[in-house]
Amino acid sequence: MQAEKKTIKASEMDPKFKYEISKMHGGEKLMRCFQCGTCTSDCPVARFSETYRPRQIIRMAQLGLRNRVLNSDTLWLCAACFTCTDRCPQDVEVASVIRVLRNLAAEQGCVPEVFKEQCSSILESGYAYKIPELRVRKREQLGLPPLPKGNTDSISKSLCNVHFLKHLGKKGE
Amino acid sequence: MASLKYLMFLGCAIPYRVSAFEISARKVLCKLGVELHEMPEFNCCGLPLDPVSHEMMLILAARNLALAEREGLDITTLCPGCAGTLKKVNRMLKENKELRDDINSHLKDSGLQFKGTSNVKHFMQLMVEDVGLEKIKNSVTKPLTMLKVAEHNGCHILRPKEFIGFDDPEDPKTLKTLIEATGATCLDYMDETECCGAPSVGVSDKVALQLARDKLNHVKAVEAEAMITICPFCHIMYDTNELRIEKMFNEVYGIPVLHYPQLLGLAMGMKPAELAFSELRVDVSKLLNKVEEKK
Image 1 (cartoon, rainbow over the protein chains, first blue to last red):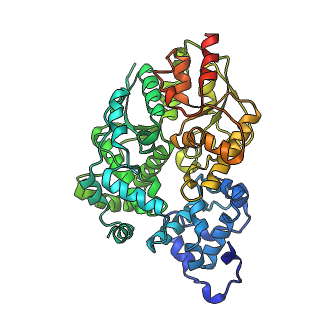
Image 2: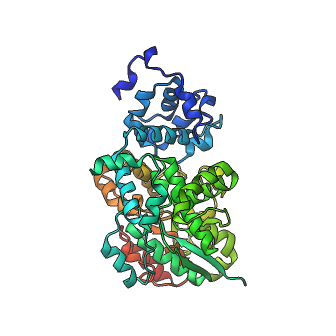
Protein backbone atom coordinates (compact mmCIF):
# COMPACT_ATOMS: atom_id res chain seq x y z
CA MET A 1 0.00 0.00 0.00
CA GLN A 2 1.73 3.13 -1.31
CA ALA A 3 -0.02 5.57 1.00
CA GLU A 4 1.55 4.00 4.05
CA LYS A 5 5.06 4.59 2.77
CA LYS A 6 4.58 8.36 2.63
CA THR A 7 6.50 10.63 4.99
CA ILE A 8 4.64 11.17 8.23
CA LYS A 9 3.77 14.80 8.86
CA ALA A 10 3.49 16.02 12.43
CA SER A 11 0.14 17.57 11.56
CA GLU A 12 -1.21 14.09 10.80
CA MET A 13 -0.56 12.85 14.30
CA ASP A 14 -3.28 12.99 16.89
CA PRO A 15 -1.60 12.62 20.29
CA LYS A 16 -4.93 11.80 21.96
CA PHE A 17 -5.67 8.81 19.73
CA LYS A 18 -3.65 6.33 21.80
CA TYR A 19 -5.47 7.34 24.98
CA GLU A 20 -8.80 6.93 23.24
CA ILE A 21 -7.83 3.37 22.24
CA SER A 22 -6.40 2.58 25.67
CA LYS A 23 -9.77 3.34 27.23
CA MET A 24 -11.55 0.78 25.09
CA HIS A 25 -11.86 -2.85 26.05
CA GLY A 26 -8.97 -4.78 24.48
CA GLY A 27 -6.94 -1.65 23.74
CA GLU A 28 -5.72 -1.06 27.30
CA LYS A 29 -2.15 -2.25 26.75
CA LEU A 30 -1.44 -0.51 23.45
CA MET A 31 1.28 1.67 24.92
CA ARG A 32 3.29 -1.32 26.16
CA CYS A 33 4.26 -2.27 22.60
CA PHE A 34 8.00 -1.77 22.00
CA GLN A 35 7.88 -2.81 18.36
CA CYS A 36 9.75 -6.12 18.67
CA GLY A 37 7.82 -7.54 15.70
CA THR A 38 6.86 -10.90 17.20
CA CYS A 39 3.28 -10.28 16.04
CA THR A 40 4.22 -9.72 12.42
CA SER A 41 6.73 -12.54 12.22
CA ASP A 42 4.21 -15.02 13.67
CA CYS A 43 1.21 -13.70 11.76
CA PRO A 44 -0.14 -16.25 9.25
CA VAL A 45 -1.81 -13.52 7.18
CA ALA A 46 1.40 -11.46 6.98
CA ARG A 47 3.09 -14.47 5.40
CA PHE A 48 0.86 -14.21 2.37
CA SER A 49 -0.19 -10.57 2.30
CA GLU A 50 2.22 -7.94 1.05
CA THR A 51 0.57 -5.19 3.05
CA TYR A 52 -0.80 -6.54 6.31
CA ARG A 53 1.66 -6.00 9.16
CA PRO A 54 0.25 -5.98 12.70
CA ARG A 55 3.33 -4.26 14.12
CA GLN A 56 2.87 -1.41 11.67
CA ILE A 57 -0.80 -1.05 12.56
CA ILE A 58 0.07 -0.88 16.26
CA ARG A 59 2.74 1.75 15.59
CA MET A 60 0.35 3.84 13.54
CA ALA A 61 -2.11 3.70 16.42
CA GLN A 62 0.57 4.72 18.92
CA LEU A 63 1.64 7.65 16.74
CA GLY A 64 -1.93 8.80 16.38
CA LEU A 65 -2.19 8.40 12.60
CA ARG A 66 -5.92 8.18 13.01
CA ASN A 67 -7.08 8.69 9.44
CA ARG A 68 -4.39 6.60 7.86
CA VAL A 69 -4.98 3.60 10.07
CA LEU A 70 -8.78 3.78 10.13
CA ASN A 71 -9.03 4.14 6.35
CA SER A 72 -6.52 1.39 5.68
CA ASP A 73 -7.87 -1.66 3.85
CA THR A 74 -5.31 -3.88 5.50
CA LEU A 75 -6.99 -3.39 8.87
CA TRP A 76 -9.68 -5.82 7.71
CA LEU A 77 -7.30 -8.61 6.75
CA CYS A 78 -6.67 -9.87 10.30
CA ALA A 79 -8.04 -13.42 10.59
CA ALA A 80 -8.43 -13.07 14.38
CA CYS A 81 -6.42 -16.24 15.03
CA PHE A 82 -5.00 -14.59 18.20
CA THR A 83 -1.50 -15.97 17.65
CA CYS A 84 -0.11 -12.42 18.09
CA THR A 85 -2.04 -11.92 21.32
CA ASP A 86 -0.86 -15.22 22.78
CA ARG A 87 2.79 -14.65 21.84
CA CYS A 88 3.28 -10.94 22.57
CA PRO A 89 6.11 -10.65 25.13
CA GLN A 90 4.64 -7.36 26.36
CA ASP A 91 1.17 -8.84 26.84
CA VAL A 92 -0.40 -6.49 24.32
CA GLU A 93 -3.68 -7.92 23.06
CA VAL A 94 -2.65 -7.21 19.49
CA ALA A 95 -5.70 -8.79 17.82
CA SER A 96 -7.97 -6.90 20.22
CA VAL A 97 -6.26 -3.56 19.48
CA ILE A 98 -6.91 -4.26 15.82
CA ARG A 99 -10.53 -5.05 16.65
CA VAL A 100 -10.78 -1.73 18.54
CA LEU A 101 -9.44 0.06 15.46
CA ARG A 102 -11.92 -1.76 13.25
CA ASN A 103 -14.74 -0.75 15.59
CA LEU A 104 -13.63 2.89 15.31
CA ALA A 105 -13.42 2.62 11.52
CA ALA A 106 -16.88 1.03 11.42
CA GLU A 107 -18.26 3.88 13.55
CA GLN A 108 -17.23 6.18 10.69
CA GLY A 109 -18.96 3.89 8.22
CA CYS A 110 -15.69 2.56 6.87
CA VAL A 111 -16.47 -1.16 6.80
CA PRO A 112 -16.41 -4.00 4.24
CA GLU A 113 -19.85 -4.82 2.86
CA VAL A 114 -19.77 -8.41 4.19
CA PHE A 115 -20.18 -7.18 7.78
CA LYS A 116 -23.21 -5.07 6.92
CA GLU A 117 -24.79 -8.07 5.21
CA GLN A 118 -24.22 -10.29 8.24
CA CYS A 119 -25.59 -7.66 10.57
CA SER A 120 -28.76 -7.24 8.49
CA SER A 121 -29.19 -10.99 8.33
CA ILE A 122 -28.96 -11.29 12.12
CA LEU A 123 -31.60 -8.59 12.56
CA GLU A 124 -33.87 -10.30 10.03
CA SER A 125 -33.48 -13.92 11.09
CA GLY A 126 -31.14 -14.28 14.06
CA TYR A 127 -28.62 -16.05 11.81
CA ALA A 128 -25.54 -14.39 10.30
CA TYR A 129 -26.27 -16.02 6.93
CA LYS A 130 -29.54 -16.22 5.07
CA ILE A 131 -30.25 -19.92 5.42
CA PRO A 132 -32.24 -21.09 2.38
CA GLU A 133 -35.73 -22.39 3.16
CA LEU A 134 -34.81 -25.60 1.34
CA ARG A 135 -32.01 -26.26 3.83
CA VAL A 136 -34.35 -25.66 6.73
CA ARG A 137 -36.90 -28.09 5.36
CA LYS A 138 -34.25 -30.67 4.42
CA ARG A 139 -33.36 -31.01 8.10
CA GLU A 140 -36.40 -33.17 8.73
CA GLN A 141 -35.40 -35.54 5.91
CA LEU A 142 -31.93 -35.79 7.41
CA GLY A 143 -33.38 -36.69 10.79
CA LEU A 144 -32.36 -33.39 12.39
CA PRO A 145 -34.52 -31.45 14.85
CA PRO A 146 -36.19 -28.26 13.56
CA LEU A 147 -33.91 -25.24 13.36
CA PRO A 148 -34.44 -22.88 16.32
CA LYS A 149 -35.97 -19.62 15.16
CA GLY A 150 -34.61 -16.17 15.83
CA ASN A 151 -36.87 -13.97 17.94
CA THR A 152 -36.38 -10.94 15.72
CA ASP A 153 -38.47 -8.53 17.82
CA SER A 154 -36.49 -9.38 20.88
CA ILE A 155 -33.15 -9.18 19.01
CA SER A 156 -34.03 -5.74 17.62
CA LYS A 157 -35.00 -4.51 21.07
CA SER A 158 -31.68 -5.64 22.53
CA LEU A 159 -29.68 -4.01 19.74
CA CYS A 160 -31.66 -0.79 19.29
CA ASN A 161 -29.06 1.40 21.01
CA VAL A 162 -26.04 0.04 19.17
CA HIS A 163 -24.41 2.88 17.17
CA PHE A 164 -23.26 0.74 14.26
CA LEU A 165 -26.85 0.08 13.17
CA LYS A 166 -27.18 3.64 11.88
CA HIS A 167 -24.87 2.69 9.01
CA LEU A 168 -27.26 -0.07 7.98
CA GLY A 169 -30.16 2.39 7.97
CA LYS A 170 -28.34 4.69 5.58
CA LYS A 171 -27.72 1.90 3.17
CA GLY A 172 -31.18 0.42 3.34
CA GLU A 173 -32.96 3.70 2.60
CA MET B 1 -24.35 -42.89 35.87
CA ALA B 2 -25.61 -39.34 35.81
CA SER B 3 -26.88 -38.35 32.40
CA LEU B 4 -25.09 -35.58 30.55
CA LYS B 5 -27.50 -32.90 29.43
CA TYR B 6 -26.56 -30.01 27.20
CA LEU B 7 -28.23 -27.27 25.26
CA MET B 8 -27.05 -27.57 21.67
CA PHE B 9 -25.98 -24.22 20.25
CA LEU B 10 -25.71 -24.74 16.49
CA GLY B 11 -24.36 -21.39 15.40
CA CYS B 12 -24.89 -20.07 11.88
CA ALA B 13 -22.35 -21.83 9.65
CA ILE B 14 -23.47 -25.37 10.49
CA PRO B 15 -27.14 -25.10 9.52
CA TYR B 16 -26.10 -22.95 6.58
CA ARG B 17 -23.72 -25.37 4.89
CA VAL B 18 -22.00 -27.89 7.17
CA SER B 19 -24.80 -30.31 8.11
CA ALA B 20 -22.53 -33.38 7.99
CA PHE B 21 -20.83 -32.14 11.17
CA GLU B 22 -24.16 -31.80 12.97
CA ILE B 23 -25.53 -35.13 11.76
CA SER B 24 -22.45 -37.11 12.74
CA ALA B 25 -21.96 -35.30 16.05
CA ARG B 26 -25.55 -35.92 17.14
CA LYS B 27 -25.24 -39.64 16.26
CA VAL B 28 -22.00 -40.04 18.15
CA LEU B 29 -23.12 -38.05 21.21
CA CYS B 30 -26.37 -40.02 21.37
CA LYS B 31 -24.41 -43.27 21.39
CA LEU B 32 -22.21 -41.94 24.18
CA GLY B 33 -25.23 -41.09 26.31
CA VAL B 34 -25.17 -37.30 25.96
CA GLU B 35 -28.66 -35.81 25.95
CA LEU B 36 -29.02 -32.77 23.70
CA HIS B 37 -31.75 -30.16 24.10
CA GLU B 38 -32.44 -27.51 21.48
CA MET B 39 -32.16 -23.75 22.00
CA PRO B 40 -35.66 -22.32 22.62
CA GLU B 41 -34.78 -19.45 20.27
CA PHE B 42 -31.59 -18.45 18.57
CA ASN B 43 -29.37 -15.61 17.57
CA CYS B 44 -25.81 -15.59 16.25
CA CYS B 45 -23.18 -15.83 19.00
CA GLY B 46 -21.94 -12.38 17.97
CA LEU B 47 -18.42 -13.24 16.82
CA PRO B 48 -18.87 -12.19 13.17
CA LEU B 49 -19.86 -8.70 14.32
CA ASP B 50 -17.10 -8.21 16.89
CA PRO B 51 -14.96 -6.46 14.24
CA VAL B 52 -17.62 -3.80 13.68
CA SER B 53 -19.09 -3.46 17.17
CA HIS B 54 -17.73 -5.08 20.29
CA GLU B 55 -20.85 -3.96 22.11
CA MET B 56 -23.12 -5.74 19.66
CA MET B 57 -21.09 -8.94 20.04
CA LEU B 58 -21.42 -8.73 23.83
CA ILE B 59 -25.19 -8.24 23.65
CA LEU B 60 -25.73 -11.07 21.18
CA ALA B 61 -23.60 -13.49 23.21
CA ALA B 62 -25.23 -12.43 26.48
CA ARG B 63 -28.70 -13.05 25.02
CA ASN B 64 -27.78 -16.68 24.31
CA LEU B 65 -26.22 -17.14 27.72
CA ALA B 66 -29.34 -15.68 29.35
CA LEU B 67 -31.55 -18.04 27.33
CA ALA B 68 -29.46 -21.03 28.45
CA GLU B 69 -29.71 -19.86 32.06
CA ARG B 70 -33.46 -19.71 31.74
CA GLU B 71 -33.44 -23.33 30.54
CA GLY B 72 -31.19 -24.25 33.44
CA LEU B 73 -28.69 -25.95 31.15
CA ASP B 74 -25.07 -25.62 30.07
CA ILE B 75 -24.32 -24.93 26.41
CA THR B 76 -22.34 -27.10 24.04
CA THR B 77 -21.40 -26.03 20.52
CA LEU B 78 -19.83 -27.64 17.49
CA CYS B 79 -18.36 -24.37 16.31
CA PRO B 80 -15.21 -23.28 18.19
CA GLY B 81 -15.98 -19.67 17.25
CA CYS B 82 -19.30 -19.81 19.08
CA ALA B 83 -17.76 -21.69 22.01
CA GLY B 84 -14.91 -19.22 22.33
CA THR B 85 -17.18 -16.19 22.13
CA LEU B 86 -19.76 -17.48 24.59
CA LYS B 87 -17.04 -18.62 26.99
CA LYS B 88 -15.23 -15.31 26.82
CA VAL B 89 -18.36 -13.20 27.29
CA ASN B 90 -19.57 -15.46 30.08
CA ARG B 91 -16.36 -14.82 31.96
CA MET B 92 -16.19 -11.11 31.19
CA LEU B 93 -19.73 -10.53 32.42
CA LYS B 94 -19.27 -12.70 35.49
CA GLU B 95 -16.13 -10.85 36.53
CA ASN B 96 -17.08 -7.28 35.63
CA LYS B 97 -20.22 -6.01 37.37
CA GLU B 98 -20.21 -2.67 35.58
CA LEU B 99 -20.12 -4.36 32.17
CA ARG B 100 -22.73 -6.90 33.26
CA ASP B 101 -25.12 -4.16 34.36
CA ASP B 102 -24.57 -2.29 31.13
CA ILE B 103 -25.25 -5.35 28.94
CA ASN B 104 -28.24 -6.34 31.07
CA SER B 105 -29.73 -2.89 30.47
CA HIS B 106 -29.82 -3.77 26.75
CA LEU B 107 -31.48 -7.13 27.47
CA LYS B 108 -34.09 -5.78 29.88
CA ASP B 109 -36.72 -4.88 27.29
CA SER B 110 -36.49 -8.39 25.87
CA GLY B 111 -37.21 -9.83 29.29
CA LEU B 112 -33.77 -11.41 29.53
CA GLN B 113 -31.09 -11.15 32.19
CA PHE B 114 -27.56 -12.50 32.37
CA LYS B 115 -26.79 -13.99 35.77
CA GLY B 116 -23.77 -16.15 35.06
CA THR B 117 -25.18 -19.55 36.02
CA SER B 118 -24.48 -21.55 32.85
CA ASN B 119 -21.24 -22.88 31.44
CA VAL B 120 -20.12 -23.35 27.86
CA LYS B 121 -18.10 -26.21 26.37
CA HIS B 122 -17.15 -27.02 22.84
CA PHE B 123 -17.97 -30.55 21.64
CA MET B 124 -14.32 -31.59 21.91
CA GLN B 125 -14.02 -30.35 25.49
CA LEU B 126 -17.25 -32.13 26.39
CA MET B 127 -15.86 -35.33 24.86
CA VAL B 128 -12.68 -35.39 26.91
CA GLU B 129 -13.91 -33.80 30.13
CA ASP B 130 -17.45 -35.16 30.50
CA VAL B 131 -17.72 -38.29 28.37
CA GLY B 132 -14.12 -39.29 29.04
CA LEU B 133 -11.53 -41.01 26.91
CA GLU B 134 -12.17 -44.44 28.42
CA LYS B 135 -15.80 -44.42 27.43
CA ILE B 136 -14.92 -43.24 23.94
CA LYS B 137 -12.34 -46.02 23.56
CA ASN B 138 -14.84 -48.56 24.81
CA SER B 139 -17.36 -47.44 22.21
CA VAL B 140 -14.97 -48.32 19.38
CA THR B 141 -15.94 -51.64 17.82
CA LYS B 142 -14.15 -51.32 14.47
CA PRO B 143 -10.74 -49.75 15.17
CA LEU B 144 -9.44 -47.74 12.21
CA THR B 145 -5.88 -49.04 12.51
CA MET B 146 -5.50 -48.96 8.72
CA LEU B 147 -5.74 -45.15 8.55
CA LYS B 148 -3.08 -42.46 8.82
CA VAL B 149 -4.60 -39.03 9.24
CA ALA B 150 -3.63 -35.47 10.15
CA GLU B 151 -5.43 -33.29 12.68
CA HIS B 152 -6.33 -29.64 12.34
CA ASN B 153 -7.52 -27.94 15.52
CA GLY B 154 -8.08 -24.44 14.22
CA CYS B 155 -7.52 -21.32 16.29
CA HIS B 156 -10.62 -20.50 18.30
CA ILE B 157 -10.71 -23.80 20.15
CA LEU B 158 -7.36 -22.77 21.69
CA ARG B 159 -6.86 -19.00 21.45
CA PRO B 160 -6.73 -16.51 23.05
CA LYS B 161 -5.30 -18.76 25.71
CA GLU B 162 -6.27 -16.50 28.57
CA PHE B 163 -9.97 -16.87 27.90
CA ILE B 164 -10.18 -20.36 26.46
CA GLY B 165 -7.99 -22.15 29.00
CA PHE B 166 -8.17 -25.47 27.17
CA ASP B 167 -5.22 -27.56 25.98
CA ASP B 168 -1.93 -25.92 24.92
CA PRO B 169 -2.27 -23.65 21.84
CA GLU B 170 1.41 -24.14 20.96
CA ASP B 171 1.27 -27.93 21.20
CA PRO B 172 -2.32 -29.14 21.33
CA LYS B 173 -2.86 -32.81 22.21
CA THR B 174 -6.60 -33.30 22.72
CA LEU B 175 -7.66 -33.88 19.13
CA LYS B 176 -4.69 -36.21 18.57
CA THR B 177 -5.70 -38.24 21.59
CA LEU B 178 -9.30 -38.40 20.38
CA ILE B 179 -8.16 -39.49 16.91
CA GLU B 180 -5.91 -42.18 18.37
CA ALA B 181 -8.87 -43.44 20.40
CA THR B 182 -10.44 -44.52 17.08
CA GLY B 183 -7.38 -46.67 16.35
CA ALA B 184 -6.16 -44.39 13.54
CA THR B 185 -2.62 -43.02 13.49
CA CYS B 186 -2.34 -39.26 13.83
CA LEU B 187 0.64 -37.91 11.90
CA ASP B 188 2.74 -34.89 12.85
CA TYR B 189 3.34 -32.28 10.17
CA MET B 190 4.78 -28.81 9.73
CA ASP B 191 2.88 -25.81 11.10
CA GLU B 192 0.09 -27.90 12.59
CA THR B 193 -1.37 -25.00 14.53
CA GLU B 194 -1.53 -22.62 11.58
CA CYS B 195 -4.79 -20.79 10.89
CA CYS B 196 -7.01 -22.00 8.00
CA GLY B 197 -7.61 -18.45 6.81
CA ALA B 198 -11.41 -18.62 6.83
CA PRO B 199 -12.02 -15.26 8.55
CA SER B 200 -10.19 -13.46 5.73
CA VAL B 201 -12.54 -14.86 3.09
CA GLY B 202 -14.64 -12.01 1.74
CA VAL B 203 -11.91 -9.49 2.56
CA SER B 204 -9.13 -11.18 0.57
CA ASP B 205 -9.93 -14.61 -0.81
CA LYS B 206 -6.44 -14.81 -2.26
CA VAL B 207 -4.71 -14.53 1.12
CA ALA B 208 -7.21 -16.91 2.73
CA LEU B 209 -6.81 -19.59 0.07
CA GLN B 210 -3.02 -19.31 0.15
CA LEU B 211 -3.15 -20.06 3.86
CA ALA B 212 -5.32 -23.10 3.28
CA ARG B 213 -3.05 -24.23 0.44
CA ASP B 214 0.01 -24.00 2.67
CA LYS B 215 -1.63 -26.33 5.18
CA LEU B 216 -2.76 -28.79 2.49
CA ASN B 217 0.83 -28.90 1.18
CA HIS B 218 2.13 -29.82 4.62
CA VAL B 219 -0.55 -32.47 5.12
CA LYS B 220 0.21 -33.93 1.69
CA ALA B 221 3.94 -34.01 2.46
CA VAL B 222 3.41 -36.54 5.26
CA GLU B 223 1.04 -38.58 3.07
CA ALA B 224 -1.94 -38.28 5.36
CA GLU B 225 -4.98 -40.09 4.00
CA ALA B 226 -7.39 -37.58 5.50
CA MET B 227 -7.53 -34.39 7.48
CA ILE B 228 -9.67 -34.32 10.62
CA THR B 229 -11.31 -31.06 11.71
CA ILE B 230 -13.56 -29.94 14.55
CA CYS B 231 -14.61 -26.55 13.17
CA PRO B 232 -17.16 -25.81 10.44
CA PHE B 233 -15.11 -22.92 9.03
CA CYS B 234 -11.85 -24.88 8.85
CA HIS B 235 -13.81 -27.65 7.16
CA ILE B 236 -15.16 -25.27 4.53
CA MET B 237 -11.61 -24.02 3.85
CA TYR B 238 -10.15 -27.48 3.28
CA ASP B 239 -13.06 -29.53 1.96
CA THR B 240 -15.39 -27.12 0.17
CA ASN B 241 -12.49 -25.06 -1.17
CA GLU B 242 -10.01 -27.86 -1.89
CA LEU B 243 -10.94 -28.11 -5.58
CA ARG B 244 -10.83 -24.35 -5.93
CA ILE B 245 -7.36 -24.28 -4.38
CA GLU B 246 -6.19 -27.10 -6.66
CA LYS B 247 -7.33 -25.15 -9.72
CA MET B 248 -6.07 -21.78 -8.56
CA PHE B 249 -2.56 -22.96 -7.69
CA ASN B 250 -2.28 -25.87 -10.09
CA GLU B 251 -1.94 -28.44 -7.33
CA VAL B 252 -3.32 -31.93 -6.79
CA TYR B 253 -4.36 -32.98 -3.30
CA GLY B 254 -7.37 -35.28 -3.21
CA ILE B 255 -7.19 -35.24 0.57
CA PRO B 256 -10.58 -36.01 2.14
CA VAL B 257 -11.50 -33.79 5.09
CA LEU B 258 -13.60 -35.46 7.78
CA HIS B 259 -15.39 -33.97 10.76
CA TYR B 260 -14.04 -35.74 13.83
CA PRO B 261 -17.42 -37.35 14.73
CA GLN B 262 -17.50 -38.91 11.26
CA LEU B 263 -14.21 -40.65 12.00
CA LEU B 264 -15.36 -41.74 15.44
CA GLY B 265 -18.70 -42.88 14.03
CA LEU B 266 -16.92 -45.17 11.56
CA ALA B 267 -14.90 -46.63 14.41
CA MET B 268 -18.13 -47.18 16.34
CA GLY B 269 -19.33 -49.31 13.43
CA MET B 270 -21.78 -46.79 11.96
CA LYS B 271 -22.38 -46.75 8.21
CA PRO B 272 -20.99 -43.87 6.11
CA ALA B 273 -24.56 -43.00 5.05
CA GLU B 274 -25.59 -42.53 8.69
CA LEU B 275 -22.67 -40.13 9.12
CA ALA B 276 -23.51 -37.99 6.06
CA PHE B 277 -20.30 -38.80 4.16
CA SER B 278 -22.14 -37.93 0.94
CA GLU B 279 -22.16 -34.26 2.02
CA LEU B 280 -18.37 -34.05 1.72
CA ARG B 281 -16.97 -32.43 -1.42
CA VAL B 282 -13.64 -34.23 -1.72
CA ASP B 283 -14.01 -37.84 -2.84
CA VAL B 284 -13.91 -40.18 0.17
CA SER B 285 -14.50 -43.46 -1.66
CA LYS B 286 -10.86 -44.59 -1.52
CA LEU B 287 -10.72 -44.03 2.20
CA LEU B 288 -14.06 -45.73 2.83
CA ASN B 289 -13.03 -48.72 0.69
CA LYS B 290 -9.89 -49.10 2.74
CA VAL B 291 -11.90 -49.04 5.96
CA GLU B 292 -14.39 -51.52 4.53
CA GLU B 293 -11.70 -53.95 3.27
CA LYS B 294 -9.96 -54.25 6.60
CA LYS B 295 -13.08 -54.68 8.70
